[in-house]
Image 1 (cartoon, rainbow, N blue to C red):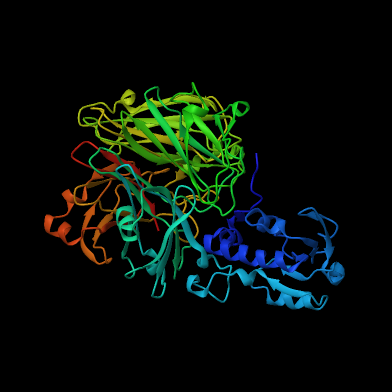
Image 2: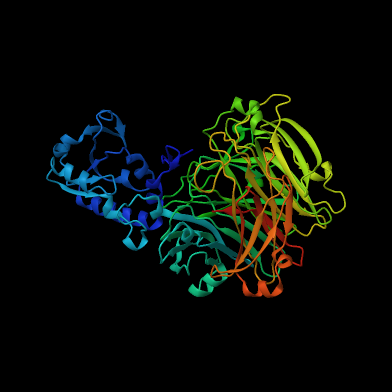
Length: 630
């Protein structure tokens, strides 16, 4: 297995150098620089920040005719990088190099230092910078705001289209106008199909990208690939968040999911094995400008590392490959799950479940390799329920809700869990101790077994830790939730992880906050509205690790496409309760008519709500996924 030698996080923060090197336009400019150096003759590398391995992982740096590698830190001297012994920069003049490449951005001072010791031409990574039109902070290239970027699964083929929706939330952080978004569309083979700029209309305005419109604008054939986006003019937040809908035309296919997370991971989990009558496809998408070598991506039944199977083919730069999980792991069936060894080659991938010709799309989650069980979690009574994972239980007359706990840390040997069902008024309808589930468990629980099949029931459920029989916990508790129409018309699923909610006490970085330090005790959630023929539904949950305010004080604020407020409603949700609602039922027809293509902002300054959004159509198609906040 080939794992990319990149650092996605440094000291707990996103590594901006990675974002700069992985940028498709930046990668092209770096390759042009390296190509010119190859033609010029031997090249010496000056690597003061010890980043040669990362640059080489995402470029053809190692293919240069190297005359030596030189460093600045005396502790690095004598070590090895790229197969060369690190020598002191003071000796670089004896390298015989025709040129010296300084491995750094904003490196004028380092270039001047090197020039004291050599007469060779000195170039830096600044020669491969993005043009200023891509930069929010031109004076400091590796500022996180210069790389508010992301990749999205994007398809327009076989009667399926994709719609990406977000709002200009950067304006709320004080970003100055104008703000623009660079878009580059990659086809299934990784080739560039189109690129263009989108202008954001103003603070709070909607950005909506529809694959049907893109395909018509550029005269494209059918495609299934990925869309790269880069926000210029961002402020306060360098992560691009969006809702992603996959829509079938003249068929029941309907899905919603969200942003891909810009950081490639070593491992992903939460990929369900197929039922006998299902097909589960993982969309393996290369996130970089370098090919993924054959055998670098591996699939294994959860808890059975020795049974891992490698994807045997190379994946071209930015290409999309359809991986049929049954073909790789025959005999593995729901409710077993699959672990994916990604080797940092791809951001969080999407998968697709196909049953009776109807499909729905969801995402896997990052499996952590840096966590260990935390004994303190078994003895923190001041945090009440502590970490909890809330999810909707949709009305029993039409839907069946199932939960599948998913190990999400490589060190997780067992899961000591309790499942509790709550009515919408916050009272407990049923509870069950699930025991210490082993890593390779196959336990999927229907909430009908706890009373969710009662006539008219609607509410939510929570997974929490329960150490009655011992076991380990790390706070990274995840599960997959599957909702199925009782008439068999359609299904949807989502997955997420636990947090500490609504307590004034803090444990490490919990309860998390949208901005500032914990505790996070406020809500700002984005609910995009569906197309005219597609209704929008939303489940808001008021989870509490310890007793908090008896009810929420929640504003539901309807906005039009330009970000202007149209109307607002006030609702109250019971502590440990929930609210399932539809904008079309809460706002008048006149108000909704003013806001086609708009959104609802869910705002509460008294508590932290957790939300799930969905779409539904008269033919029985529906979808559900968790919401994002900013």
